[in-house]
Each structure stands twice: as C-alpha cells, then as structure tokens.
Amino acid sequence: MIVLDKDKLSSFFESVSSGFVQSPLEILIVILLLIGFFGFLLLMYRIQKKRAKRKLFKQSQEKFERLVKKFDINPSEQALIRKLADFLKKPEKEYLLLLNQATFNSSVNKLKAKEELPAVAVTGLRLKLGFSAQDPEKRPSSSAELPQGMGVIIITEGGKKYPGKVTDCQAQSLAVHLEDPTAPISRGNPVTLYFQNRSGIFAFTTFVQERKGTAVYLDHSDKIVRHQRRKYYRKRLLLPLFIKPAGSEEVPVRSIMLDLGGGGASLKNPYARFKSGDDLELSFHPAGEKQFFILTEVLRVSKNGKILHVRFGPLKETTRDRIIGFLFRRKA
Image 1 (spheres, rainbow, N blue to C red):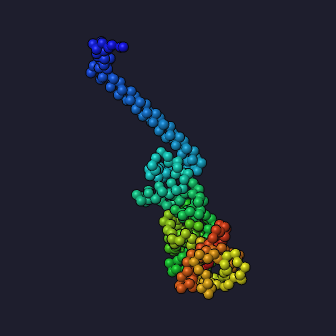
Image 2: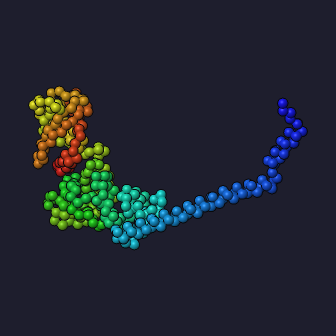
Image 3: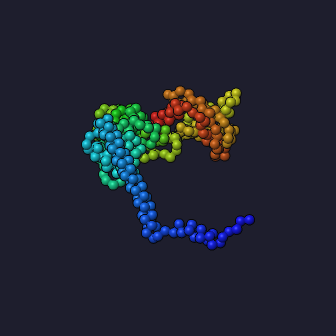
C-alpha cells in the first residue's frame, strides 16, 4: 500500500507551478522578440517583392525594346503606346499592346473617350503591328483591319450600291477597286462601305479622298458598326430549288427559296407537306455558282404551313463561304 505525504505532495505542485510564473519584464521581452521576428519576416517579404517587381519591370522593358526594334516603332508611336499603357491593369506590361490585338483595341477605345486621336497615327501603328491581317473572321475594330481581296459594297448618299474589292491598305487611306468604272463616286463624296465576314455584316461611313479610274481611296474609320444581328447575313431573294425528305429515294419537288443566309433559309412548303422537325435535303443552283446540296432541319412553319424555316446541318466552311460570298455579291 502506497502512503502519500500530503505536505510533500503540496510542496511538489507548488514548485512545478512556480516555473510557469514569469515576471512582467520577461513577458515583455518575449512579446518584443515575437514582434521583432514577425517584423523581420514582413521586411524580407517586402524586399523580395520589390526585387521581383524590379525584375519583372526590367524583363518587360527588355521585351518592349525588342518589339520596338522588330516592328520599327518610331518615337512618336512609342509615345502613343505609353499613353495606351495607362489603361492596362499593369502599365509596365506595355509590350502586350504590341502583341495582342484585343488589348490594343481596348486601350485605343478608352483613350479615344478621353482625347482626340490622330487616325493616321493609330492606323499606321495597326499596320506595323500586323493587326490588319490578324483574326480576319472576327469583328474588326478599324477599317485598317480589312484584308486585301475582301469584297465590299459602297453605297452613295443617293442609295446606289457599287460592289468592289479592297486592293490596298495604307496608313493614310483604304483603296477599293470598283467593278463599275462608271460609278459616280468622286473626291469628297460621303459614302458608306459595307463588308462581311463570318461574324456578320458591318459598315462604316467615310469620305472619298481620291478617285483614279476604278480605284477609290477612302478615309479610315474606327467606328465599325454591325449591320445585322443575325449570326450570318440573311438576304431576301427568289431562288428556285428542289426539296425532298433526307435519305429518301423520292423525286425532289420544286419549291422557291424566299431568303437565304449562312446558317439557314426560308422557303415555300410544297403542298404544305412538311412540318417542324423534318429533315430535308435541299438543292439549288444560283446563276454563276456551283450547285449546292444541303441537309437541313425544319425549325418551324408559318403562314398556315405555307412557309418553312430551316436550319442548315453541319456545313463545310468552304460551302458556307460560297453561300455568304454569293449573297454579298448579289445585287439587291
């Protein structure tokens, strides 16, 4: 049997507990040491962050200088770029303006909201950076982005339409070759230029700088507006076509196409026979074009079943390009 001496046990616990009692001075010293330690860590973090920022800034400047040499950017253009860089989240990354067309366009639009920009300077910079040739199928931000060979339509104040093609793009002007050499378009005339890519149909108003034979030279514009909201341009027309149920051996029946776009069409419903959800094969042969064979789905019918509204099935991009090109070349 173990017998505990109460006096000795009490003395033991008192000696143990006294080890945890510190004087106010000792507690203060410990707190100061902790503050000093965390302060040292914070100081080192800030030093390292500044070093990293300086390193990033140096790397950004080196990239910018390399790109300046690569694109032969002159001092006035560099000054413009530094103005544009003020609208970046990190202005030190101004080199991004020379590499990314979307970043460049965004900064240009923001700067234009604050001050007047010389169109020639902005256009010249776009051309140097090659932005006129990038992403030709996206919505353009400037007439300087129109590629050579693109089909366009110039509309005069009187509403007359004259088709043509972009032949050259310089900092000072956009050159367009007119198909009609007798088109009454001359220097100083205000005109509207329409063009189309897979993103839609767009337009901008401008003035004729000069006319030389079939070539007209137009002022550039950054005010490009979408002409239609449809994903693909749609045009009213009357075009004969043949139609039959998809995959059937039936003899195609004749119908009339009422409008056509890059993604679908509207057509007369022969004998009110077809209904929503039907899969159909269409064939049509526009003048001057190869014949089209397209698989479609009826989205809906209208006018008491007399009109079919169809959506094209998967198309080769070359086929869609042919359709859009045909529509855009076709005169109203």
